[in-house]
Length: 481
Image (cartoon, rainbow, N blue to C red; front, side, top):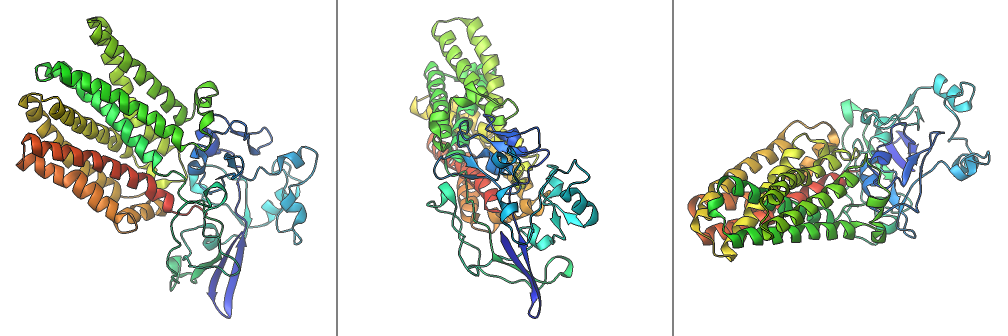
């Protein structure tokens, strides 16, 4: 329950808002779940099966209402399930029964004679975030925007009777964002009376930590390295020594294996990782990504076998198949993030190009470092130098478009503001822009020696990680409820 105060004494009012699962007609949490742990029942209840959940936390990113969390005992997702076990025996949800003022009313909207249908017909009601297209089934009678929109009210450092600014459940012991400094605006939207939170719902915290940007970075290196290798084999094979080719193949396999390790590390139930392959929900981009990475690994192995056995046909098949799977491996995360409807900043149409460009930058930088290690010819460096310089310049343009362009919502604007001027400004401006792009760009232009390019490549790899870290973290700092 969230309390919001509006106005100033004595002309003031407090709104009490119950925030819970909306049991949407189009639940995005069900679509993103890779193992069908979340499902919509025939009666409309969005329920979950903790026996299947792998703890990937994708559902928490997909829900626009912040309804999901990780159970500290089972380490699986949990939420309000409309007391489905009570409904099955003809009982009402526990919150409905225990409420002394009948402030919570439940029933069947398809029955025109039910209490909820009558109330819905006779009263002005509102839902949270209707623009998300989820068709939520939780209606608020005379609901005020200040209590339903988490961005319309000011934050406070402390609350009236208790403090719930820490993470909840499995996240309670982890480090999260500190509450914002107490500010009370002079007025809200369109001159409305000022509003502030007096008592807030518990914070879920940043549920996707360092493991997710690390896995995005490692798969960018792996896929980008193979793409650069194939392109150079097709167009400028003369500059590639045999040692560089084998080193690139080994490095690509290594970083792909590292990607799988980071993915498993991020799960709260890592022993259930095989469920993604054995009990897949094929609409989820987590499943599609898992099969893509597996397919990419298979073509990598096939390429190694074809070259080692000197079978040109086998090598050509591996090149074509590996290229296709490498591109999908590089960009599928954009579709995964796009299906996380709770995070508006990830809905950017530029994210796909962002992921592909990061992959090519990481791959080109890794190829350059491998060329230094294997003492390759200067022709390799002279070829990679202008390509990387162009990539750095293009990457800066893409990031500028994502951050300074028009955003689809206030939540996306808040995330961009966090990157540009908020708590993530130092990792972004120093780690991503300066170290990761500007300095390597300058080094490519003014210091095209092997030493200068080596430094530029190392900086670029660091910059790719910092960029992904900022892009993954920023939207999660924006409150959903």
